Image (cartoon, rainbow, N blue to C red):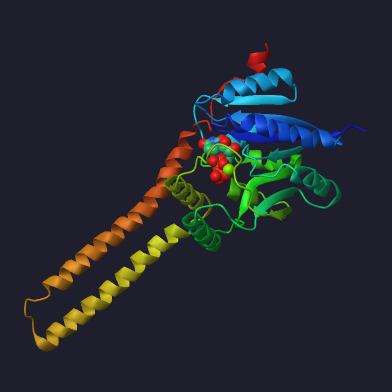
Length: 315
Ligand code: UDP
Ligand code: MG
């Protein structure tokens, strides 16, 4: 019987230290499970260090290694998309290069897909040890918020590390949007996902490329991509202030009829002007965020641009 092929997609951004360590580890594990064939698809996401030359070398010594190198940094989401487009496997895995996603889990993930009725095995961290406190705090509330306002279920602590069947990969590829929020996309396409749990593993070498501000922007994009509730909230705020304005107008009219009009009330006037101005800007900002995303989508720019792949190198 022909063996299944597992494609493993590995986004890399300035990971010269990690690539050789990762390769060694995954090689050891995949060679151990002789029941499947595998291919490694490294995506070089515009690294400025030696990552690309290390990948070139690996690809020449091992024909199972492929790499796709971007013309600049397009972000991890773009890297995952590029990997999915080029993966040929019957099963496709997405995995970080920093060994924070334990490769040991892969054989059992494969077994689960083979024997049980699932289309995808995901992973989720049960704790966030080793991560800055403040980051965990905001992460927790981000998941609470997005799950409350989005119909798409975004699993708290779920990593991008997952193994999918070909069917699911094809479904994900059908989603060609420019603003790619994988956590939402993987959930939106449906299919049965089983989550394996493990405790947080710290990065083996190198450093995380996420800044706090970067994560904040990423979570806002995630919300905009998978929820329209902020727009509803903006209209709701508008409606409520309108009602309050009418009630106030009635109140002042009646008060003037009863007590006459003395020209006071400068303070309340200023408070109202400032308050209304603030609310208008807030709502405009929310609407603007959606228009901005629409703007980006309508341009239909490519999600990434390839500069070099192992195919070019081998010729
Ligand atoms: N990564 C990438 N492009 C980027 C940032 C990160 O391809 O712009 C890759 C990175 O090389 C790693 C994975 O995405 O393989 C996860 O990155 P990181 O460890 O920095 O994120 P964290 O684990 O802290 O969430
Ligand atoms: Mg990491």
